[in-house]
Length: 531
Figure (cartoon, one colour):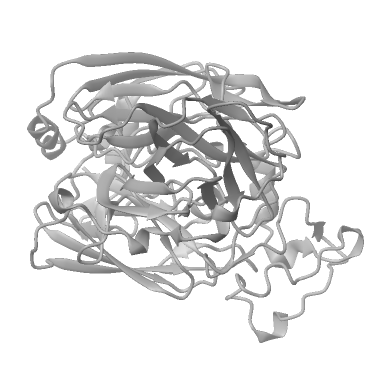
């Protein structure tokens, strides 16, 4: 069967089930055979997970919603069950999640759900064209998989820039043998918000795609070039060092952010002007409040569900003890603040004082941020613009952490090394991996090949002048020889970062920048297991 006919047959037969060998079906006779997302190797890996046999059934309805963000701010967006974040999903390690997605989005909008950070079976990973067909409007799709690793996760769509709407929610997998001792939990979801306020994510992306060359940087907008400081324009060329406003076809910078600079992020902090930064769906002027008692030890599960913003997180008058990142335990570190990129999660322990305290998520480099309050006693709430001194104290990033002994990868010879060069820039907004923008119509065009049982090394080489949070689906990797186990990590500009993982989850897995706009522009690839 030739490749064209094979693809046609598969697409005709998959329908709403959608989980066939989509990414493998366009291979030619000279291309390597790849493990199918719903093949026998995937089924065998799922069987090895065992599981408790207990099922946790939910229905998730993606539909238009009008949300109250607090302080009189109401916005139209898309959300699960009319709320953002969506309702928390919580189950025990080894349980099977059975989640029916009902797509009630407008027009012919397709969608999906990606279970971020979960090492699940490949055909349930929620990446249209790679592991399933997109769920059509008016249709349903049921995700079913064993969640065999405890931790803090979340879920969101993997279609276009839908991540930057309200379609996300926490997913907590509890450890029945939890080794940590604490009195309570508080799930904290951070997000940068534009939808329905100044525009839609699709409008944001349309402007960004014009690149710096298509923007009107002067005139009424008053925004000069100092914001990106030529940092994220590595592909400009010397003759473009001082672009002038375009008199034809240029656009004023409605969404593109200028002036976002961060030493922690190595320069340019982000691309997008966000009117609001949310903590658990609330703006700083009308914040979410956690009520507790002084002296109680609380586990905070912090999730960055944003699309273009890293947050520096601190709790006023408290120190935080980092216990986990991306679901995996680390050697405990006490800090004043932590830096969390898009897609990352951190668990911390804190013993609460007596009073009212600000939990601040400062939008790194953007002179803005989100706020929640911790109230354990009497006292006046701080102002929405409060900046506790802890934000300037000891700040910990993932590169400074070490994996806990029981999750550190066993020493092994590296079987295959792949260089993952991060390329592109703001001038043409041409973000890519190894210089090749990803094409969802041909997801297996340039696979990063691995084999089951291999120890794999990925060398992230950031050739750009902007940071990128790089996320690998279906696996966790270790930073260096003894760093933390993660699935999303910040790669700083002009730096190299080596990570290692074991080829123990066959299939075809997305590897991409979790800046929603960088990924959609092309900074994605497929890590594909050879059959």
